[in-house]
Image 1 (tube, rainbow, N blue to C red):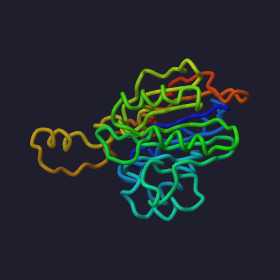
Image 2: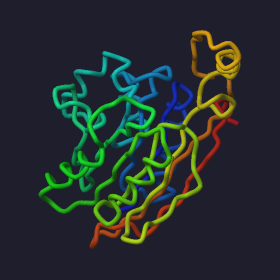
Image 3: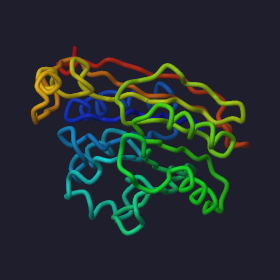
Length: 260
């Protein structure tokens, strides 16, 4: 199995880059499945039915998410439907949606960290329970949506040999630590983002600087004027016989919104 995981998609620039790049990458890299974190796809905060459909139309097979999945109420009924969209599994069980799903030959688990984030259920014990619930042997990808690099790295080691891939999301900053861990699990601390390059993690620069300088409430908006869009992803090759990863490598591109 050849799997591409795309970092957090940010706003319209990110969605446009998906439509422009993913169909060609599917052919170029002979991809079997494409998974992307879409929690910032709708104007930088949350996901809507329309933006989810745009991502599926652009070549994404499964959408994972994180703490911003609740920001657009429009998407909530879709989370309870059969659409291939996940929310973090370690939220309390009575919230909309699901945190695990089998999509074709791949099982995807969505978890969220707790360090510097919401005090939700323990993602490590949640992962144990979810893995115990899988009755059929399939490759398993885990999106660990977390702020702290240490928490994501710890999850990688905790699940080494038990899942095919652990990929970190949330910071929008791609890390250079992609590797296959000793027991066969592919890992990277953060896939990065698919969003405006000339920005602060996808949003306009000046309001962020003003927020740091003044400490006053500031409205952040997606940096749609940035012509350059960075596309960060990782390509994982999974051994069909063992379910373990053979390799993981970064696939990073730059796309110009004016088509140049």
